[in-house]
Image (cartoon, rainbow over all chains, first blue to last red; front, side, top):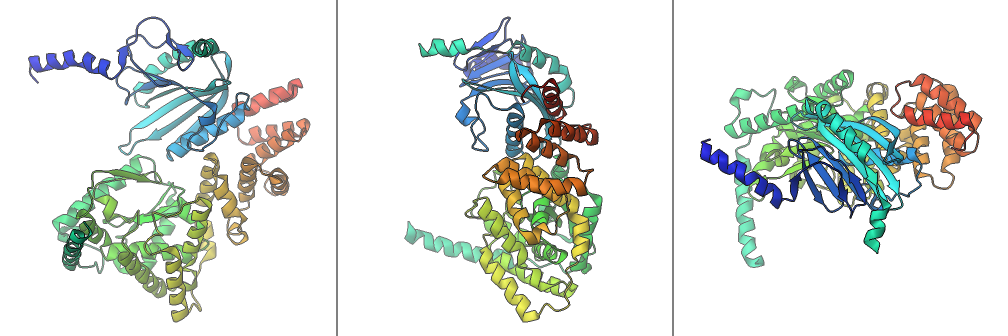
Amino acid sequence: MNVPARRTIWLLLPLLAGLLGAARVTQGPVTHSKARFAATLPVGWVMDMRGHTLSASRDGFNVQIIQLSRRDLKDAFPAQELSASADMDLEQLGELFVAEAKRQNENVEIQSTEPAVLGGRDAVRAEWSFATPNGLRFRVIAFIMTTPDGVFEVWYKAPALHYFERDRAAFEAVVASFKYDPELAKSRQR
Amino acid sequence: MRGRGLPLLGLLATGVAWAASDIVSFVGRPDPALLSSEETRLWHQSSEQDGALQKQGSLYEDAALDAYLQGLCDRLFPEFDGAIRMRALRSTLPNAFMMPNGSTYMHAGMLAVVRNEAQLAAIIAHEGGHFVDKHGLRNMRRASKSIVFAQLVALGGVPLVGELIAASSIYGFSRELEREADAAAVERMSRAGYDLGEASAPFLALQGYYAVNKIKEPIFYASHPRLDERIDYFDAAADARGTAGGARNDEAFLAATAGARLFVLEEELKRRNHAVVIHLLSDAGLRATYPREADYHLAAALRQRNAAGDLARAEELLVPLSLERPEHPETWKLLGDLRLRAGQGAEARVHYLRYLELRPDAADRAFVERQLQKLESGATP
């Protein structure tokens, strides 16, 4: 590829990213007021906010992705057509969470489900993996918690080879910074 | 529109007849060097698909089971000398399919609904019939005139791309080709000495499976021709040829498939498909073909469903199982859950401890330890 063509592509990339709703992450927490949460994303990653979902990636959303989202309690487990409740038993929540992953991809292999804390509240942490038809194995760490404002999920997916361990600390920092803020919901209602 | 469509249909039909006329069935182990360029391309695509299934982790890795399936296939198709290659897949959907290069896949879910080797032979003989008569190639030629192969479909975790959608039997073929394969299955079963009276049973089992899963128009193994028509066909063939002395080989089948059948129950429970597990194990005849531990799976499915009386029924199943199979860890875990629910914390604690002792690497260990801490601190879980 010649130099002018390469330069044109570099010039067009930010424009394209802007058109798609993506932006570079800068210092400080990102607040998703519509989805009622805030978190500090890795600086320099590309983020994308749409609907009730906030996504971030360093090398491409199909490579590694950190995703935070909120759903209504009634839409908690769409593949099972089941709702959730704010005070659900954690083990039952974990069972439903894993079942949802397995229904979406039959080849998912569950490594663990355990009680955890997310944003200072009881949550479930699960780990699973799956392989694509070309043999690329992905690993996933996912958190889920229920609140009166809905179901919150924070998850990280990356290829087992190289990427997963490299960016794991970045994900753990996001988890540590996650904050569910019911006040955001109230301010929207007013 | 209708008036213009008719001549077009006529042309297509003529084209199909012409296209199929130069396809000659295999009579023994094929020599890849003698395949047409069209077939070579299909075989190449099939080999790529074989690789993808392996890389994706879709294979049910059990060498003894694969050897058993292969032996059964070779008994049905002795002159093919292993050219039809059998593998088991992890998929819990009751299905089986072949690809144009002879690779034939048996879903674990199909093993879960059949009861003996003669029933399994009916499925394998049917799939082998597709291969012998090159139904993949015939179907692909027909389909290529009417659809675009730019899509990717995934059924039971098996992704297929392009021409293989039409050339593999995963979605079934036309009514005519399926009937041919059924006729070939009757012939092969009869020659190999299997009990033809068992041939219709897998299709009956599929009818029940579809009803439970609320599948109105099954997309595989059932729609061409309809299941009830196929059941009638196999029963009529059994009546005409007689079934006396035919082999069923119950014990060999149960020994080879026990692990895969329990795997299907476990996977269905993980997906919370309790209706399927309850359906399978509530059939006394089918239940009798499962290992003793399947009572745990039925109890776990009842707990998931949690309808009136389900928990009491689950306990009725688990108590004797815990005595007869004290080494089965999950029985203790579930019994602990039921005891906890009944307010019997001390009993629950003992069962949970037994579970962790037997299954120290349990995926849900942290949950159980949390429950134990609550019990030991006197908190109400």
